Length: 462
Ligand SMILES: Cc1ncc(COP(=O)(O)O)c(C=O)c1O
Image 1 (cartoon, rainbow, N blue to C red):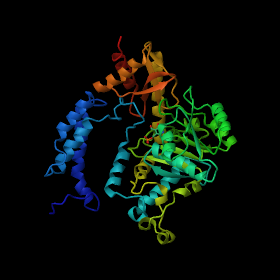
Image 2: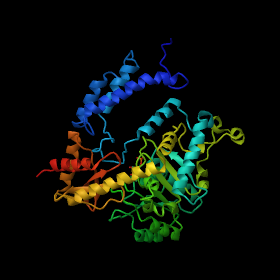
Image 3: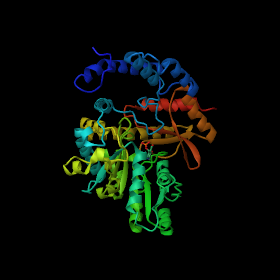
Image 4: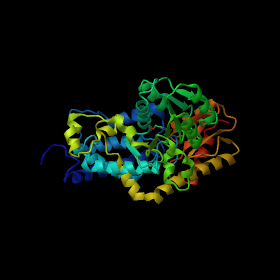
C-alpha cells in the first residue's frame, strides 16, 4: 500500500472517493444542523472567530489526514454558510443548486477535463458543443447560425459581449459607444472600462426599465458605432426592459443590441412565462446564466450570439494547444471559445439537469418560483404595515415597512443578518431603499413567506 494520497480519477478513484464523500455529506449535514437557519448568527467577527477555532492550523507540518481535514473544514464552512436552500435566504440571485446538478459537478471535478484542448477533454468537448448549440437555439429559435460560449457567469458573458461589439465595429472611425440604462448590471460599464472604450452613456430609468424614447434621442445625438445593452431581469427589481421597442430603436439606428438576460433567460424554459422575453432574439448577443434561474452550482454562464461569425475575433493559436496541423487533421479547436485557458466542463452539470428534468420539469421549477413571488407580493399588499414596490415581473419582490426611512430599512436588513434569521437584499428604487426578496427556491412554501414577513415585522422598530 502506498502512502501517497489517492487520486479521484481512474478505476480506483470512485472507491477512494466513496468513504470521503460519506465524511463530506455527514459534515454538510452537521454543519447545517448546527447553523439551524439561513446563515450563521453573530455577524462577521463572530463567524470568523468560530471558523478559526474550528479549523485550527491550516498548514500544519504534519497533515491531519483526509478524514479530519474534510470533517472539520466542511462542517465549519457549512455551519457558517448563507444557505440558499433555506427558504429565508432570499437576498441575491444566489440559487439553491439542484442535488442532481451538484452530483454531476462532482464527476466534473473527479475527471477534471480541461476545455482548452481536445486532448484534455474529448467527450466533454463533444458535450459542450451539443449543449451550447441547444441553448443557443433556445435563445435564438429562428437563427441557424446561432452559437453560445460557456462563461463563468453573467459578468464574463457581458464582458465578452462588449468585446465582440468592439471587434465587430473595429473599422469604424470611432470606438464603439456603449449605452446602458441606469438599471443595468455594473459589469457592463466595467467591461467598457476594461476594454478601453469611451465612458458609457448611462440613461436614466426612473421607472426601473430602459426608456426607448430616451434611447432614441441618445442614439440620434451621439456619434456611432453604438452598442446598446438592455436587461431582461434587472438585478434590483427583476424587471424586463421593453425588448421589442428597444430592438426597434436599435434597428432604426443601426446600433448593436446586447441583452443581459442573466436572470430572465430562465423564463425561456416556461411555456407559461416565455412570452415576457419576446424580442430577445432580436439582440446580437444574449447573456444567460444558469446559476441564477437555472438551479446550477456556480459557474454556469453563457453568451449566446445570433451569428457565430461574430465569434471569429476570439480565434487564437498556441502551438501546444491547437497547432494548425492538428486543427487541419480534425481536432476541434476550442481555444477560441473563451478567453480563459484551463476551463472546467461546466456544461456537464447543465446537461445532466436538462436531461433529468426535461422541459416540463424545468418549466415547473420556473413556474413555481414565479408563483411564489406573486404570492409574497399579495401578502405584502394585504399587510397593513408594509408597502409593495410593484407586482413582480420575475421572482423579485421589493417591500418596506410603511413610513420607515431608509436608515430603518437598512437596519432591519442588517439586524436580520446578524441574528442569522433571514437573508434579504436591498434595492434603491424611486429614490427610496427597499427590502428585496429574490425567490429562487422552488421548495419554499407560502408558510415560509408568511414567516419571512413576521420576522421583518419583529425587527421593525415601533
Ligand atoms: C442582470 C445581471 N447581469 C449580470 C450579472 C452578473 O452575473 P455573475 O455574478 O454570474 O457574474 C448579474 C448578477 O447578479 C445580474 O443580476
